[in-house]
Each structure stands twice: as structure tokens, then as C-alpha cells.
View 1 (cartoon, rainbow, N blue to C red):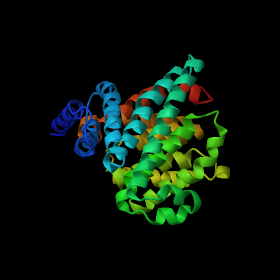
View 2 (cartoon, helix red, strand yellow; view 1 turned 180 degrees about the horizontal axis):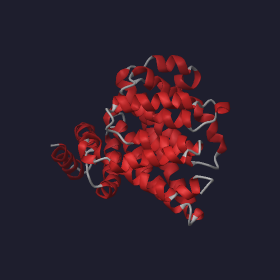
View 3 (cartoon, rainbow, N blue to C red; view 1 turned 90 degrees about the horizontal axis):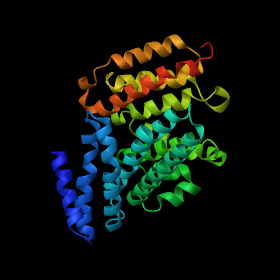
Length: 301
């Protein structure tokens, strides 16, 4: 049904030429519902090929409806997921053999994450006029205005922002933006910890587990987030397992736990959890790449 709705909206958008804001709103609302269809897909490469066209179509629709909240959210989440699942993954695969080429692809990923972040902030501004200015001068007061319906905007804005900082390894000035990013994600956690099957807790596995205690990290907090993410997804999401293996196990040089977690990920039947099928297939791809790189990740190797 969502594919039909998507196709009809696309036909309206492409056939309308200089479509009015009302048509853009209608098509935009329909297009923005396609995310869950992608989420249950069983062919990551098909999704990879389809996403750029879908995202550019939504950007065109946004010109006719610049404050369409659903479009802004879909663009924030869509660009963030495309950049992470495909562009950043390409850069990581290139890095060992061709660091110069990898650097160019990492730079592209950073630009896409920045675009996702901007759309997320625009979404919050559309929902709460004046939010951006207030967030800059009175962060806590701005965040206090938000409610549970704002959680998707908070999550995708913060996730894209964090990813942009992570892949921009030479842009040290971005490190100073960790505090506002963390404030957005903490507010999302406080409002709805169960969002998307524990996605916010999954973020904090990496964020708390990947920083030393001197930098504000905590393996104990990361473990609590890991356990809660697994509970909230009823063990159906593989992301927490891969994140723990990649971040915490590697940092602790715990090869045994690393292998155990990746074995668990690769043994999982993605069809058992249709809602998370695409994310789980991508997690399994990442697990295979991590296993191939194990000799680079563990000193004893």
C-alpha cells in the first residue's frame, strides 16, 4: 500500500510542473510515509539505488512547501540513513587500501550528514517557530518546549550531527558542537526512551562506550543502554550487538566477546523481524566487514 501511495504521489509531483504548495503538501505527506516500506525491504542494493531519487524528489517538493514537517523529517532521516548505510560504509571499505579515495568519500558522507542535520533543525523550527534562535542562547528553555511528538526530529537531527562530527576527522572545530548535539539526544531520551525500538539507547552505546572516562564516557552506562536497547526491541534489532562489538569490544581489546557478538548477528534470520529487516541486513553486512578487519582491530593479531 505504501508503495502505491508513493507512486501516486510521485506521479502527481512530476506531472504537475509548477505545482502549488497545496499539491506539494499532499504529495509530500504521501512520500514521507515511504520510510517504513524501505525499512522492511530485503534488498539493500535496491534501496541504495532508489533512495537518491526519492530524496531529490522530496527536496523538489519541499520548494513548494518549505515548512512541511513530514517532508523535513523524511529528508533528515533519509539523508542520515543513506549517508551512514551506504556512503560511510563505502569509505570505510576503501580506507585500508586507498586512504586518499576514502577521504573523499568520508567528506561526501559528512556533507550528507550536514544536510540531514539542517533538515532536522528546519523541522524543529517549523514545529516551534523561534526554536533555533532560542536553542542558541537558552538551550534548556528551548528544549523544555518540546514534547513526545518532537522526538523523531530530535533523534535524527542529533544522530546526523554526531555522525557528521565522527566522519569529519580533520575538522577539529566540530568537536565543540558535541554539547548541543548531546543535549538534543538527551531530550529525546527523556521524552521517549522507547523510540524506534530503543534507537536512542543504541546511539548511547556508541557515544558512552566510545569515549574514555576522562572525556565523559562510561562503559557501565553503555552497558545499561545496551541492555535496554535489547529489551525495547525484544532482541529483534542487531544494531546494538554490532555497535557493542565495534566500539566497546574493540576498545577493550576483547576479541572473544567481539567474535561472540558477530556470530550472534550473522546467525540471525532477518526475516524473523520484518519491521527491522533492512537495518538487520545492513548490520549483518557491517558484521562481515568487521570480521574481515579483525586483524587490524586487535593488537594481538
